[in-house]
Image (tube, rainbow, N blue to C red; front, side, top):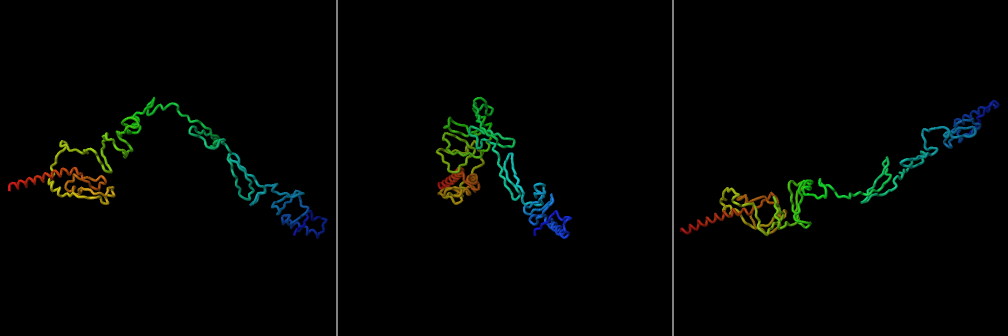
Length: 340
């Protein structure tokens, strides 16, 4: 219930019976904080304080009007939901952006970088290079173009050679560590030979993709051919000159050794086919049989060292001695027949 206290009461002229009611009314208004929503006192003294539940402020009476104390004094609340007056937050300098904050919710401020480069975009070409200018903070403030300066004069020194530069083979050998291929003949249509002297590094294999010229006589320390080898002329191999040999004895019982060998037809089995041999009719002997009677005529097969192959040319010596033994028997039998 709204009270109606008069802060000028009681006075000496008032009746005693009215004094308690005035004091009670004043006490009731004071207990409610003089909130205008629950009380409406009169003759309030200057500088009186009250709580105004309508606007949520503490107010002070100037003698004529009530004014919010927040506008006069720095009053801090233990908790606050919202600022009475929103405050502006502004960024300046290298970035710019503004926003208003009253404490009621989070805010997001978009920052903008200033334009410091007057020529944005790409720069440079095959004949020009970009020249970049930056400030102390690393920002690009400008880009200009400068022409690429190509030397007008030719190269004056290569590998220590001056003047009209012409590389000698020794220059390349010294730089690369090995002698490169040397041309044989003239011009781009000439033939090229391989001439490596000393130690050639990092060369693990060399593949010849074309036929060797018939007029050439290449020399190889070793040659492995994965396929058939044919020749229109004679094939000369190893050595047979007696002046290069120290004889260790003749082949004994050559005929008996030949009789232990068998000549037969055959074709490549599955193991041989897996190594690349074709299934065709062949004629030959057994390397194991030859090894048992003449091991010097057997060698590891080039396709795989765990297999054997026969050096057929070395069987000739065995056959010669076997024929001689057979001839001696024929002579002996002829003499016996003649004497009978």
